[in-house]
Image (cartoon, rainbow, N blue to C red):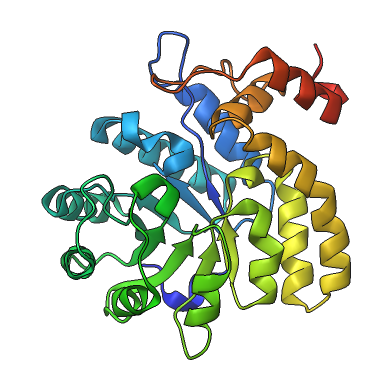
Length: 296
């Protein structure tokens, strides 16, 4: 089981490849995970936002997780595997968290309940019940997707729960991080890729970064330099990544990532499940200008 002290470094939120008929493409998925394992990542997130979790069934999550375990075992590496189990129903979230534990997940990633906009007391109770399952919980605060922004006191109350080991902060600024790091806090992982280095400078312990599916090694290098306190070199390295990060979020994640991985031959198709759709011709051209090797 994952512990708070383990929440550092780059955690890879893997994508979910689909065939042109929108069925799972497990061959491409294995290839994707194998490529990521060539780098010094600290963990893998299955069924996160980058994995198109809203359109992936639990039966498919099981297939993806089992494939991930097999690839990791074949690689000879040992690293934590995390499953996204959060929904906007506490009953469903608790059930999925129980099932994740049965599968052998080292932790679960649970998003703030979305769409129904519960009161903060309800959010705390939601996390309390999920954390009582016994599988370590990483909270996930992402207001622009959930329609609900938690205040610092609510986040602190969630982090104070025994079974919660940290939080993915995708709030879009450093305000929450600043409030949490005024005192002792459980680990905060950056979830806004363009803020990664800034958050590391202000107390974040790593990141769950969609962009790290591309040029993974550079993100690892930025983390290592920042961890060593060499922020000047980290900034130079990170500045080289910023144009790519901006392009990857110019249209909805993970469509740009899927297109690049397909151009690189890692995926067989850049298919997404509706209502997600492939990137525009215009963005394709911009990505080719950024990465000429993608032209084919």
